[in-house]
Image (cartoon, rainbow, N blue to C red; front, side, top):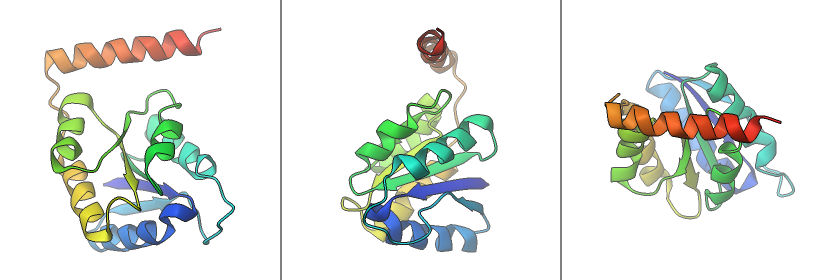
Amino acid sequence: MRIGVATDHGGFSLKEALCGELRAQGHQMTDFGAFALDPGDDYPDFVIPLARAVASGEIERGIAICSSGVGASIAANKVPGVRAALIHDDFSAAQGVEDDDLNVICLGSRVVDERRALALVSLFLAARFSGAERHRRRLAKVAALEREVSSP
């Protein structure tokens, strides 16, 4: 699978560990940064390019990390076509994809450790959107809202 990952300084070491493990599993990884540990960097500078790549289809799924995961989630969801969520439990990691077509998982590096993060990402990547009519209907309403908000 084509996967993108992005973080600021808060999730730098977690990003590095996840990238290594996911590459070892055979995934194609695109790293949107940060590329060095810089305590002064800002998560939107890395998460927004990741979100745009997901929205355009350049990558299939995204992983956005910051210290809590909250800021990464907020930033990613500003890009139309992105459905990002802060995930720290198994149920939501899979159900978010199955029901809501989640395409960006957001993680907090101070909330989940490496092992837990990899387990959540694995569930996220293995899940598939159900395509059920009720889920398509709900997503259509979200897409309509995105169009309304982005129209002048």
